[in-house]
Image (cartoon, rainbow, N blue to C red):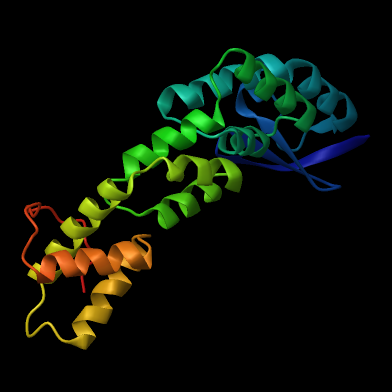
Length: 217
């Protein structure tokens, strides 16, 4: 199909070509290899074929760069590649290659994420974070199930102590409920939240420090 390129805009990782029939997202590295300019008449079918033929190598390089910057789930890598204009079939090949090279592993990713977040959040919030990042619910639940009740309770006590240290007045029912709500926002279940409050109330906590993780209210 022959049509004119009306406009070219830069987006993250790609150029968006505004055509007479719609838009075409082109990875920046491929645009540099075969430049297109606004106002140019383009054979879009041939250009899409060029992207499909050359895309795999470029997409693989792009994915490896993404993973070198930070830990990512399969879904995060897939979405970034698709958003950059690589065809779905090309992205599927890249994902398969990354698994073969052991550069992607959602189970290991979920375990690392859970451990890194466990010092200030409960299981429920960590599970939500993982599912938002495209990790399956089953894998997310498995990762958070490895967090021990003892560590979750100790962290909940620490957050509770910090939260209460910033409040004024008597420890009444209203403050009790506000503290439970704070712990719920951090993802701690009701049982751990109540136990944390009981430990603080009985003066048994020895974990307080000067950090600032609890919600400001």
